[in-house]
Length: 126
Image (cartoon, rainbow, N blue to C red; front, side):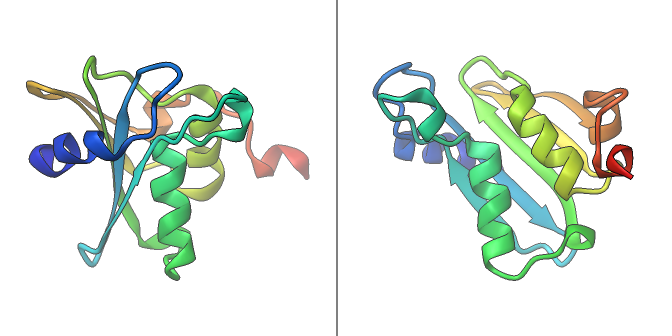
């Protein structure tokens, strides 16, 4: 996975912040859906790699219960931003594994429940 995600960094459209990120959603049947971050001159109009990969999976018919892992690659190995964390909480099961890479390899592995402690979710809206 590291090699594919490293190569995908080249597809990132990070012309403004110069911070390429790639991501993959791996399903229980081993289907993989990829995404890269796409920046615009208006930061809110862009999209992060994690959400791009997640929404790509949904576009292709994947359901929440099908998702096994989220892989995220950046040069420094950063965790998902808080907007992406909210999407992960809303659209994935809390036991889905998140694997963070930098250019040297895997840095961290955790579950969404570890990454998003005390998260606000749709259950709070009831």
